[in-house]
Image (cartoon, rainbow, N blue to C red; front, top):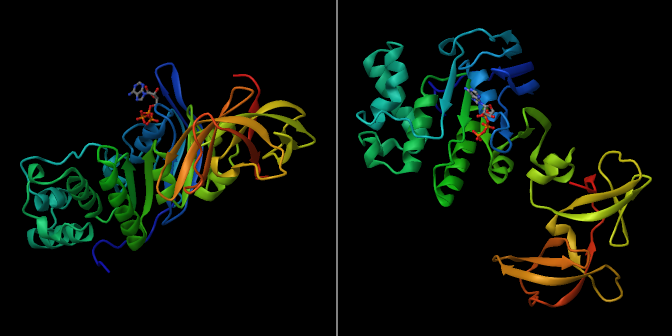
Length: 352
Ligand code: ATP
């Protein structure tokens, strides 16, 4: 276990934070409590305000209203260099003329840490991110994933109280992205450092976070564990953004939806009426003998290793995705009947 990189964990709270740029309000009374040592992702589509929220926590922007606290202390007007945070951005942002070691020790040199001690701390930080052997390499001699590891080592070397990560994986190819996100998860747990991670990639957020805050149009729609968000999305926006779903017609009566002639529980309360329901692919099946279900025609069926993902068009026109074992082969144009598992569904207005 590292000695210099250890620091007791810090909670972070946003309390009714508002941010206006000119006449445009981009954050609407954002409130969020992040526990000490927790890994929380801010997830949402482009432009929903994730980066702005992170920059406010970093002290790179001033809120229009509201407060930001760290361990209960009001830091709303504290400059960035006094907030004790480490940051990693999407672009590698390394100094091209400094090698990995000198890039990593930069923050220590700025703080006038003694030369030998700074070198030892930087090497330890590089070791932590798996780059112990590449300390002499310059950025152009490192892959994108390795450069992001150096950026992470540099952010961690000063033992910050909070680590802020702004889409740090989005410039990397898929395989490296998965490797590095697993590394980030391991390092975060090892150090116990409170971490806030901004991403628009829902799989990334679900895979790495203790909790995820789903943002939409400057507001937090829901915050919860990955399981809570996936299984019981609180709003149509969360259902649509987290995980894959199809929209199918549903009639709600006394809190229960009828979909394809079957009764399915509804998340939250909705008045009686016609809706569209979000249905997960793993909850749709091909009807067995004696089961009724909805008539549909197979459009595509793709082999994905351990399962197949199939798209079927209902007679009412909607295309429904289903996921099933790879040994069930479904030909394009085949007539099938679809049934649904009675898992709770989110419903939204029948129009729009
Ligand atoms: P992305 O994933 O595309 O980075 P985001 O969710 O991080 O999106 P923000 O970068 O926080 O979104 O931007 C939120 C809104 O605020 C956007 O509409 C953006 O155009 C606007 N915005 C951000 N920074 C500024 C600025 N300095 N001046 C004016 N408007 C800004």
